[in-house]
Image (tube, rainbow, N blue to C red; front, top):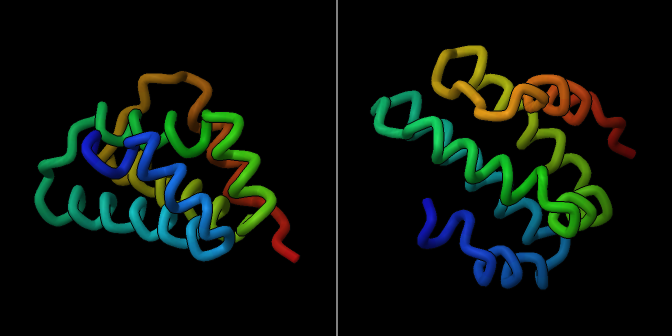
Length: 108
């Protein structure tokens, strides 16, 4: 996870691709969720790192809101599902509320 998924250089690289870059970030969250669901090998701190790098970082969050708000909503929904299934217990107490609000974003 740290080598690519939350690596600032990788994030900056995909951000150069606009809409498609945001899609790739959302797909990465989907892959992490699927791996966690099938193997149980994804620790809470991995999900925390993804949440912090994609949704708590102001620059990345702004990029997602601007270039692909649907991807942002999908990421939030997938992370919420990870919590609901017991795959992730967020370190941040405010994560659940923030994810709920993001997953209900209106997409034009």
